[in-house]
Image 1 (cartoon, each protein chain N blue to C red):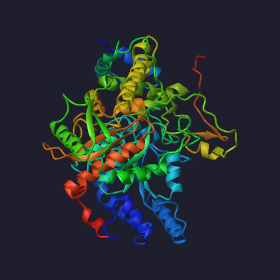
Image 2: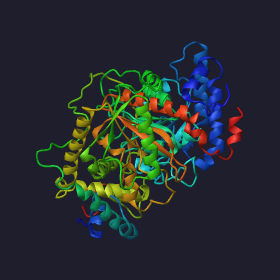
Image 3: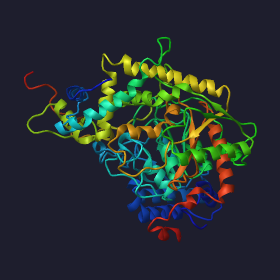
Image 4: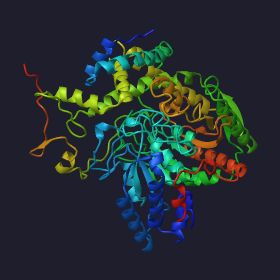
Length: 509
Length: 99
């Protein structure tokens, strides 16, 4: 097997099954690739070479005994640094957790280990997943492999950049307001936010409990589906986990890859267009819609009037939940402790620690959340936001009564330059305009690459949303669109990305 | 238009247990005002008849079987603590000096 780092996870799984490659070989190839390019990309906060190679050797031994645990046994993966990994540092991109090594695995991580996927390392992110650019990481930004001067999206910019730069075939992300899908869009990769409750949140360091959801970050829709089949399903350790049997998402993606869209009714969301939307992104979006029509889909326009309030609603609900979640960083049980001079009280230690340990964006959101929850403002802000959340869910219900899936561009613009929006929080927040409604309502969504914007030659993304529990639809439609584009382009979009310095060394294997 | 004063931010920071420096207060207060101005647009959007949603899934009282499963050992639970004494978390004094 050649080109190990450029292969899809599905192809690597086939290669392993056919005995054409070993897990040690392909894990080594990805570790070498990380060595070669991650100095420039900075997708990883921690690389576990020894652990990954040991897991890979175990996988090869298992396979030799005829005991492979599933199709992805032996295919390496990168994990966002917000998921607890036993024995591996977990920082959430924050100084307050620098050096913390969890004594337990998140359920998602436990399932990866059970399925035999070697963990390459932990990926960079905006601190506690607060951000849309990965610039709010306390450990420095990740860079977009398409243009190293630009942001890779956020908060999961590390996971998206890792798969875009061929440092990992698969990665795990988490999506609270778009943190899987928006990085997917701006790096030309695939990202899926499952139905809320579809993937366990146990061991996922919470940003906003009612919005957070972990999901696949990959280069193809089929790879995302295969990974979702591994990490999804009920977990008694997460009381919000959905107790039901899920269909095979791998099969849904395979069915979609025929490119046949006949019988599928697609709704274009009226409110997710207009002022502030980049012309090149809108042009690619219209082309994608036309492609779906040509493939047999029926397309109608659907209005979701409350979506115009989604951003404001989100930026009240999220800080409110985050401010109470982050109260656990009190300098007592884990993480940083800063002790001021003299004989300070626990409260003084807490205040000094939280000032030193949290970055600007985290402080902004904690203060905002504290404000929204304080008496006198609660009804006007948090209470009102919760009601609008109901209206947004009703918009989805009404739309899905008429159409099978809803579509929009994933993000309003392509990747912007590092530093451009760092001190203008509202401008930064606007990146999540199209992705936030799905989190508020708990519905699943995917972002699929749909070309390069004419004005800057950077990737854009196509978002497909489905009703709660109908995740298989986003895989079917996503795989169809991907197949239609592959025919048109003669290969994946990432073939058009510039080669990174040092790339040659990793490709020889 | 909601304005948030520097003093209010200082008070909120105290409630949130974050020591903000003067420079941080100068920096954050105007940014928070801009954010609050933007989110204030939701006022009056939903009427009294709209029920609030706290959670996307309407779940209540989720139970599991009451079976013993292995948990963390004391060593594991204490492994990330800034200070440990006699198999316990060691913390600074919790009362004010005048108390």
